[in-house]
Length: 389
Ligand SMILES: *Cc1c(COP(=O)(O)O)cnc(C)c1O
Image (tube, rainbow, N blue to C red):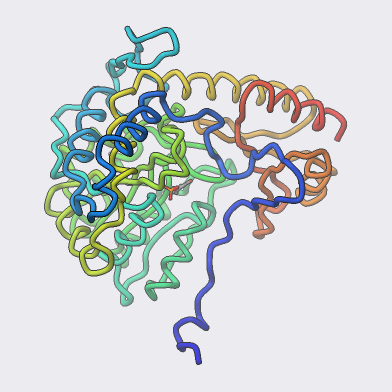
């Protein structure tokens, strides 16, 4: 009864969400803080003032939302944890951000450079469909976001996985050599997951200079707001650069399902063609309202990102003092292991105490845990469990 195609699918497995007891959830890199108070207000106001809008199809182009995203990027430069925050109310709401001098954009992002979708996962699937073919290998690191291979399988795109270097950084030389040899596209997350390490903008610029100019180069910036370097300024120089971002991590909105692409208007048009061949309305009316309100409160999200980064650095100190090996992190999670303790055993012992962390059984990273940074209280609870392991 089922198609031949479905037999070949190999679906992504997200962080578990068991219901048998209340767990402290540190396994999906969600933000522990709620969205800005302005988001709650906007959603309530929309439901009250425009209930009839819910009976109508939403704006298929998210016009106002794209304007709001463009203006947010121009205002914060693209890395919340490195911005200056000023003004606003006591709870941080309404505060404005100034980009750090290093993150100031050398051009103005315009709404026609933005594509919005139902989470960056959906956005990524459109990017795969729009730019990668089944007759050419796509180059990616061996350990990176594990949804990429799932989409490659779905769309029948062959992959060339490049092992990470011994220090867990991307093997840029190898990736470039292969991309040049095969005239291929490259995709990776920066900062990368699950390693939490990022490349500098200069490192990415030097990759883009050498990579094939007629092939798309995708940088997934899901975690950049926690302290990475954004490649947004490079859009001025490289027409083949596609940057994917999400409201799920630094914007405290995983439940809203909102992701976006920043790229040249020509590339955005291609992705829009894919969307219009699949689902005209991936971003619903309420999410458009919530997204617009989010973009107006960069000060709030910058404070959240800074708090997460602070807790992360304290947690890394704690782990190192307790004999764990931990990579440096530019994200809202850490990647760590302890000698003599298997990743699976550590995961199970932590779960017994009511805390979920992520363990991958993938070869090469099976000894490691990926742990999301939560609130101060959640991290204290986790530390008291991990101290005894
Ligand atoms: C979380 C994550 C995503 C998915 O984000 P959604 O917008 O929630 O779909 C994409 N890429 C990376 C690297 C992620 O970690």
